[in-house]
Image 1: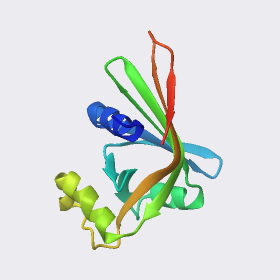
Image 2: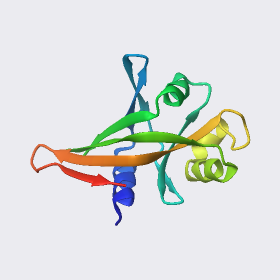
Image 3: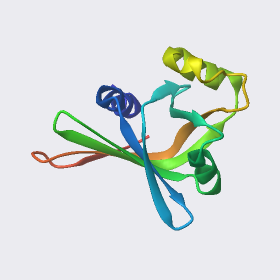
Length: 133
């Protein structure tokens, strides 16, 4: 299993992860649930009308954290917007429950992928392991 597959699998197993962004000098954290690999990149999804979208446009540096089974992961990197229809369709196909709120052709659906990402797997019982993707 590749590093990116391992990270995505962990996020999916956790179900919910927390995305941290910066709003001026104030950190902002909120729950997310989408993690999808498309064209070899790890994607998440949001809506362009949400504050998180504006925060990432101003500063694309972000970090996510998830916990499951006594382990946690932190993923840090830059989230890059991908406005291609194919990327949006791939995400919505992977998460069909989102299709009630989002459409690949609307002006709100936003998918972003991690660039220059580093993931650290940690637990209370083993040394931390850091991987890049």
